[in-house]
Image (cartoon, rainbow, N blue to C red; front, side):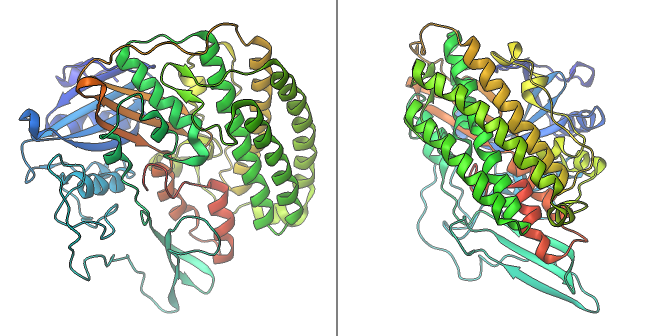
Length: 514
C-alpha cells in the first residue's frame, strides 16, 4: 500500500515478502485502514505490546495485506488510559483481536463491545499478562467471568447452549444458538477456555529454542507455524537458506496440507451420514502419517522446520516410498471423490448448506481455502511465491458457490494439487546441506513471517531482544478471521446442520491461544 500520499513515512520491515513499517497517529491509522479497505486490502493481524521500558507507553500493531505486500501500522498510546480508534467499523474481524489485545496488554479502543475475549478468570481482571510488570495473584471476584451473550427476542424464539465441554476429545468452545424451531436465527461463539499463555512463554525463551514452541501453537499446522516463525527469525538474522532446506520445507508443508484435507473429508462424509467416507479417508491419512514418522521422525512433522533450515534430511528410500504413496493416494482420492459426488444423500446435505457469498466473504475477511470456495482466490503460494514455490507454479483451487459442497470440492482439488507438488518436489529436490549455522541475532529488530498453511495464511510477528532473546512474538492463526464467518454461514440453516458447516471450515480452537 502506498502510504506517502497520506503523509505517512515508512521504513522497510524484515519479511520474506515486500513489507513496510509505518508509525501512525490516530487519524492516520483510520485513514490508512480505510484506504486499504477501499483498495481490496485485508486486516491480517492486530496485537499490542508494552513499550513503557522504552518510554513509549504502549503500541498497537495493525498488519495489513494487499496485492503489493504487507504494511505494519504502529500506533503509540502514551499510557493505559489512552484510546485508539475502533477498527471493526472498517474491518469487522478486528473486534475480537482488539478485545484480546485489551485482555492481554490493557490497550483500550473506542468500541461498543467492551466484553473480554481472552480473559477467562485465570488472572485478575485488572491485570494484564503481557505487560512487563505483570505479577498475577490468583484473586478475582465471583461473577466477573459471566459473559453477556447477545440474545434474540420474539414469539417462538428459544436458546440452545452447546459446550464449552463437548462429547469427545476436541477442545472446549461455547456456541449459543437463538432458534425458531430448528431454524437458526443467530449464533454467537465464545472461545479461549484453554488459553495457554504462549505469547508470554515466548518472552522467556531464546530465538533459537522458541522454534519448538512455535511448532506447538497448533498441532495440525506445526509445519506452517514453524516455517513462519523461522522466516521471521531468519529475516532478523539476515540469513539465506540452502536450496535443499527450502524444498524440504515445502515438501513437509504439502504433506501437512494433504493429511488435514484427508482427515476432514472423512469427517465431512461421516457428518453427512456416510460413515464409509470416514473409514476410507482415515485409512489414507493414517498411511500418510506413518510415512511421515518413518521419513522425518514425527507423524505430524513437529520440530522438522527450525531456524536456519530443517532438522531432518530425506533419505532416498523414503523419497521413493513417497512417490509410490502419492500415486496410490491420487487414485484413491479420485475414486472417493466420484463416490461422494454420486451419493445423492450426501450431496443433498452438502449443497446450499452453510453458504457464504463472495460479498460476505470479502466484507468479513474470510481467508484460506474457505475463502477460495467463495470466489476469493488469495493464496500466498501464488500471490507471493517464495522459494521453492516460485518454481512450482501452484494451480489455484476455487469455486464461487460458497457452500459446504464448494468447500469439499476445494479440499479435493487442493489435496490432489499437493500430491502433484510433492511429486515435483521429489523429482527436483536439490542436493546440498539442510541447515545453515545461525549468526547472532540483531537486537530490537522486528520481522514478520508468513506461510500459506492448509487452513489459510499463518503469520508470526517477532521482535528480537538483547542476547538473542525474544522481546515480543505474536503468532496469528487464520481461524481468527474465519470463526466470525461461521456465525453468518449458519443463519437460516437448521441446528443439525451445524456440525457439518463447522467441520467444512474446521477451525482451530487453540491456534494462537484462541
